[in-house]
Image 1 (cartoon, rainbow, N blue to C red):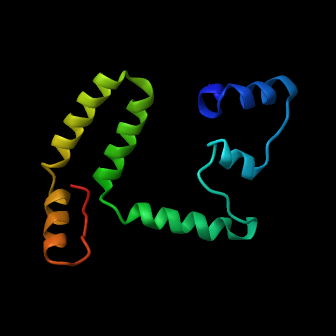
Image 2: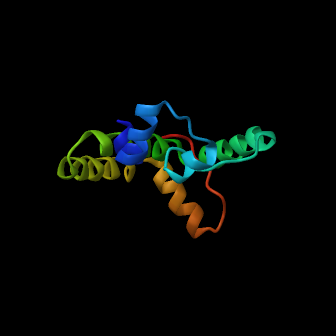
Length: 113
């Protein structure tokens, strides 16, 4: 799986030599999204968690499902599943709340329904 994530050349070198890569190289290879100083790890993690938790819970859950399917299914089947997931989301109370909040120019209050 490593070659699919970071490409054959780097994966081959790492696997055949046992070479470890540092955080910056892991970011450049696409293994991690961002690198923060060690003393900023907890605040950066908390900030990301707060950003995600401010979103509609059903939307976050659905997005995670769609991301997982993107790696497990052929494109055409994944597109069909994503469409079904979107249809389901549009029938939720949170979707209606998000729309109302947008129109009323206020932060949404999501309930996970």
